[in-house]
Image 1 (tube, helix red, strand yellow):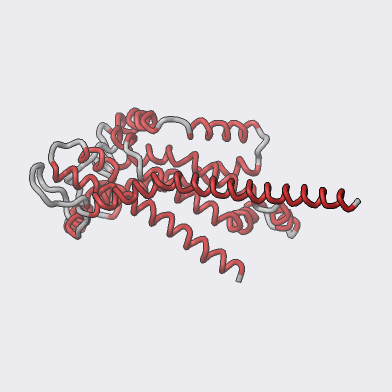
Image 2 (cartoon, helix red, strand yellow):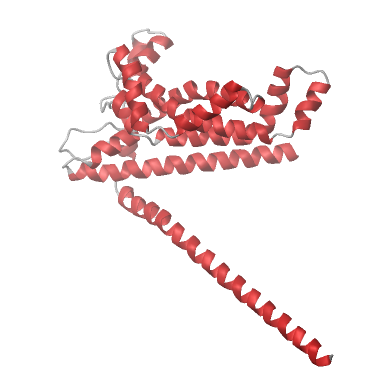
Length: 314
């Protein structure tokens, strides 16, 4: 009996050592694969930061481009254009996207809900250049010229799938007893949605908005067909001339939205293929600015979510 007990204990110890060895091997393997996966990320960030950092200066952020062949100048036009087109796209995409997501979350098994979910999945897979061509046919051809408005429409279509899917999933995660309790207390459906459902899911919804904006801000192909690019665009000059000419706010906005406009991705694409070394170096600077914008967007989202979560818990 004693020998049998010793054999069982030895076998148990052997199995325990094997488990520890297997766990150590798997832990080391997953750590190695994680490092391998992170290498391209930090490689890209480091390389772009080194190459692009040489071009960054106050002039780079505050001045318009200089004529080809001349050094210096900046990409103020592209920064302004990116902000303008992103704001337009957000205004066009967020309201219908949120409403569509709410319908899909509250009516998942209706024919319209199923069609909406299927259409969203299909739209998410459409190449961005096809959406740019659609924007050209629907907006540019009708207007007769390229414009920031056309670019905003094209980017809004790109943003819709991300907004709809993330908002729908966040609304589904809200406990049903919150919704039912509000209705049981006599609150109408619309008030329950505004006061209970959306506030409870707001963190995830805002994150979805920021992801959609980050994707749209980095797109080039749709803007090639719709906004085209405009190195002479100067937002400050437009506003000053409008004020001096006693134009209304709507007239100034019409001048801004109704002309071709540049963006950071468009500028990067144009500068990178030019034969002038100074423009190629500026292209790396533009790439670095794009990376900083994406990083800043994610940081702002995380900080905002953390602050809001602490307030809700407090």
